[in-house]
Amino acid sequence: MFAVVNHLMLNKPVDEFREAIQTSGLPLLQSLQGFRDLYFVKAGDDHAIVVLIWETGADAQNGAAVFGPTWFAKNLAPFLKAEQQRSVGQVIAGSQI
Image (cartoon, rainbow, N blue to C red; front, side, top):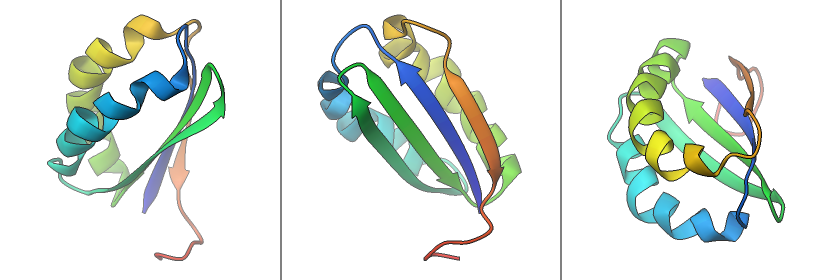
């Protein structure tokens, strides 16, 4: 498995993104090859941590190529206060491995 972790500083409350993520973001991700899971974590009123789990690094790259310029660009990017911080890597331990 492969994880992508993004820290997003937003100019509107994190809670306001819940519905869009549930109704359109998550279904799009679920349609992509190798997608395993999404966690949208409220770390603060304006700070979200997004954890995406993929089967492989290639699946994560392909998913980003679809999700980033479409759904993310429309629904999250316009509300970023700062550049997102991203970490990526292979999952080496966990309950689903």
